[in-house]
Image (cartoon, rainbow, N blue to C red; front, side, top):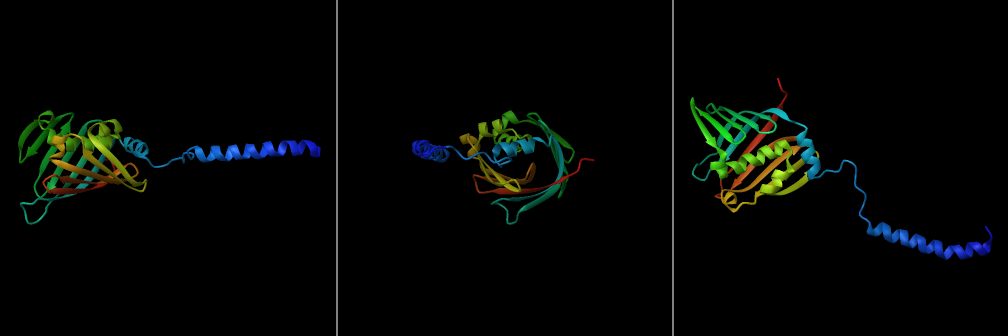
Length: 203
């Protein structure tokens, strides 16, 4: 290239590099493939439409000197079947299908419509919507915050409804990838519970 043409182009090339640099600084950074996010968590959870697990639950109540311990089995089948079978300290079964809860206490059967018990529904919806990977339901009923990464995450749910919040102040769900490992419930009166979950292979 003749020197005369080079000297004419050089200033323009410098300005072009400057514009490209400014553009790079103003543009958002490129998305990282497989980055962990609430959408990524919901997708990972939704990949488990059926699951079976054992659980251990500890409830701490202000009126009692020691926590109440229980253990048993959990079953979930998308979109709305949830079964909690307690084996210790005494057998009892809770089966949720849709908004109908069937409770079996020592052979006595009780049927409950969750529409009539919004304080219980807020707990059920948090678990069921999480297991379904249903972000729309979670954000309709809770303030949702996700912390951690794919290997160890915590989902914090605060009820939006004031009446529900008067009973349950916060729900924290932890897990790894698409599996839930624990559910902690903080009640407004100071009582709280922690359920630890160990997923098992379907028989």
